[in-house]
Length: 305
Image (tube, rainbow, N blue to C red; front, side, top):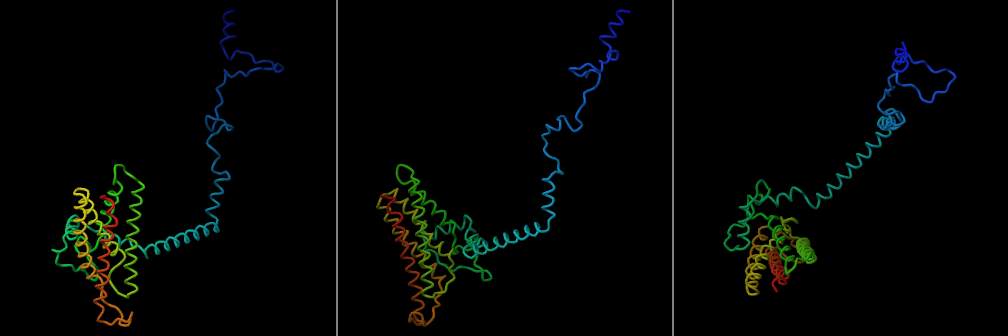
C-alpha cells in the first residue's frame, strides 16, 4: 500500500494535486498538456518575416494606380511621346545612313573579293566596266564585279591600321589611334571635296555617299601592297610598288567614275556651253584619280623608313 501511494504521488500525472489558489506558482505545469502551436506558422506574429499581407497599404496603392483613369491616361500619353521620339530619331538616322543601303555594299562573297582584288591590281586586262541593273536597281556586288563595295576597303583599312600600330619594336596604342584617326579624316576630306565639286559644278551623277567612300577606300589595297614590298625589299621595292599601285588605282578610278558621272550640266552655268560637258566630267574624274597616289604616299612613306 505504501508503494502504491508513492507511485500515485510521483509517477501518475493525474493523481497530482493542484496547488492551492492562494499560493504563487513560479512555473506553469505544462507536462500534462500538449504545447500550444502558432496556427499561422512556426514564428509568432512578432517574429513573422514574411512581410505585410497583401491587403495592406502597398497592395491597395498599386491597385488604385492601375484603376485610376488619370494614371492610365498619363501612361498612355507618355508611351505615345516615347514612340514619336523613336520614330523621329529613326527618320533622322535614315536620312544619312540607310541600313538597307549599307547591307547592299557588304553583299559580297569569296569569288567577288578575289575578282575585285585582281581588277584593282591589274585593271588593264578588264574590259567591261559597265554597272548592271535589274529593274532600275543596281545588282549587288556578288552579282556584278563592277559594283562598289565597302567590305574590301574596310578590311584593308583595318590591316593598314594594324601595320602602323605594330611598326617598330614595340606595339604603341597611341600610334594606332593616331593612324586610325588620320586615315578616317583623309577619307572624310576626300568624300566632302568630291561631293562639293559635283554640287558646285552642277554635275548630276548616280554616285551616292557610300559609293564615294567605297571608291576612295580602294586605295588601301595598294597601300597594303606597297607597305609589304617596302618591308620585304626596302626602299627600292617600296617605290616600285608605289608606282605600280598608283597607276593601277588611277586607271581603275577613271574607268569606274566615267561610268557613274553623267555629263549633264546647264548650258549657262559658269559660262560653259554644252560642248564642254564631256571635258568637265573628264576633269573631275582625273582630279579624283590623281589625288589617290598623293594620299598613298603620305600615309605609307613613314612605315618603311
